[in-house]
Length: 543
Image (tube, rainbow, N blue to C red; front, side, top):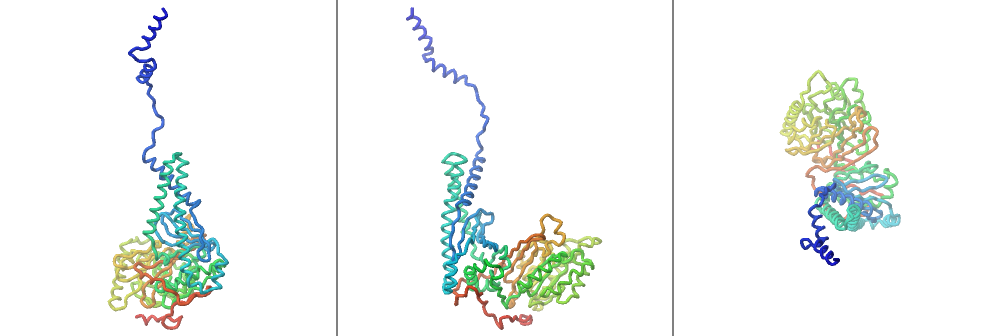
């Protein structure tokens, strides 16, 4: 009986020749309950974006934490660092005096050089052995080259380690972490290649100063020295490195500015708009830069009423001839009042004047905006006045007396003089800008020297105070270079000076060995000019 029961259970357990466990698995496979995933897999674009963010953030953290090198450059100790940047370039910080910015390259990396300390032993050695200054330029060049190599290697390690570490912390997968590190290294290498491809060796000729350094024009040198006497500029640069001790004492201990008797300096201002502080600024710039001529592109007033006329009285005491053209906020009353002032030249109807050896012609603005009884004619009126000015310029050229500078308030008016004059000066827009017109005339639009006038207090952020110093050859009347001066608006205390060369300016000659080693505390003399050092050619000598 027992045997029969065991045989029955065995036959029932092997239905279809399958074991009970196999039957159970088949049943579950055919009757599995469907499940729904509540988390969808990430989109490929989202994964790529996340990887990019991790790579960039990790690389930036790596550069921030360990991506700098400490390197002696001549007698000073510096810290060199690469920083992410939209525009690139090089920034040299000299605390507490300010900073020097150079547009040396265009890449998403900026080179920061911080002058951290002066080594008294190395500086004293140079002071006690002036003959060593001759080779200082080569020493500084070698130090900078060595520091750049060390910085490149350290930066590569920093971005790889930073991106890999952050990738490992975020993804917790070694493969993805290594991918982030590799991408960071590729990004740094490509940025370095871009910087190398866009490297501008002439960037040192167009520096931008900020802080107390903005008042040290002698650091840049005279326009003529920079353009035509590059060896003197190199000596100045070497002497600057050796005189860091004096540089730290006070800005007043910097070498005095050496004027070139063959350079005419013109101060370009515009849109004062009744700001009394502008006269003090202009007078200070006239003294500091030894200005020969002031050109005001108009809108000196705000409403052009006779009650405002006394505001113009300081023009007689600015220390240089004052050339003025009427703006759309200046009335005929304003023009007549200025015309009676001593040392003032009013431009209108294209009639040229000759001041400081330069022939200048201009046209007053045809529109007077504050006069609400007349509907403004807009740009067509400006263009018509500009064509009239262009005709007078052509007539002057036909008589063998070409005009050097055309002045108008509105850029639309000045644009009509394209091809008739090498340089046109304007204002009106409160936005400093330069551009070369189709026929070769350089159009320079000045910002507001009055910081937008007294109305500037109405806005949350005051306008900057803008002026420019233009350097002209006294022999040819051609523009050599210009300095853009920018001061913080009302309530601000910032200052910035940047040098620019005109388009197509001749490249300065290569380095030349100095014939003498300049003393550390003396400024190398400017090249000898014809005549006595302070003598300048008379206007008639250039005709």
